[in-house]
Length: 224
Length: 109
Image (cartoon, rainbow over all chains, first blue to last red; front, side):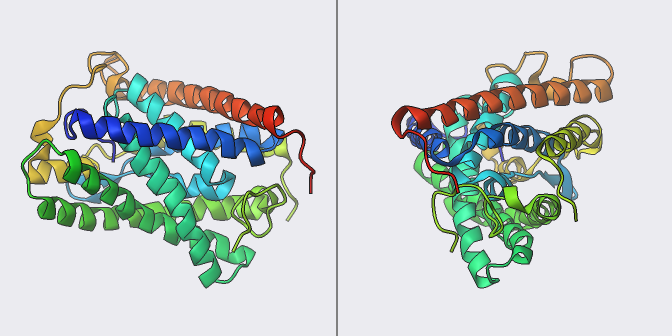
């Protein structure tokens, strides 16, 4: 899911870089409004876990793998704003230290996996939680479903970026069609992994799960 | 079920994270991920340019760090976990500090 340098031209990359920077700045502010001191190490741990999990590509089809994006997982555990920061930290380390994801594409990747994947995915999670009824037992299934859908959504972020600044001359329709079916398949893995991790934390500490009705900390918005 | 304490939650979480980064990562598929596959299938991949840090010893998760691929993956995993944990902690600590500067203490529930 990490866009390398060269796919998207400089103008579009810079514009999405500005959107990403604005999102990260807003996230620092919003996270500061609800995160408690004892959640600080937990949020750092979530960043480390997302990094580790993203290393583990799972086979999807012969010749194609996928990996966890972790946006919805992080958002349900520590809140959508902290989750955007989690993805920004992970993508920053991957791009700067491990040459995974282009430096000029960092903003594009933060938009796709952080803003769309984590914040957008969390909004979807809240809708699904209401549909599945607002019960502790609905948290993991709703998180899994939202996570599954967040992957093709994040891929559509790339489609928009390609439409605006793609340097290749491949038809947009071809790109969108190929992106969609591949990422719907990868989303299944994202959904299963997210549901498993969220269910495990819900079993041991339902009080610290931001997106759960059992959460005992501060939340910026009412859980619908 | 008895609730795990904050400290044991963090210790268990960290152990799981390190295990994923240095052990489970050994079984990762080497096939291109979804976006790279799409780029390959459609021809977009031809427009990719070299990463600025492509020649860094840590590029591609330390793939050319030593002759032992398993060791390289484990080292990259451990380093990445240490970096994301410490930078993440720092970012959240800073974010947490912004509140007291402009909003004062908030009532706890």
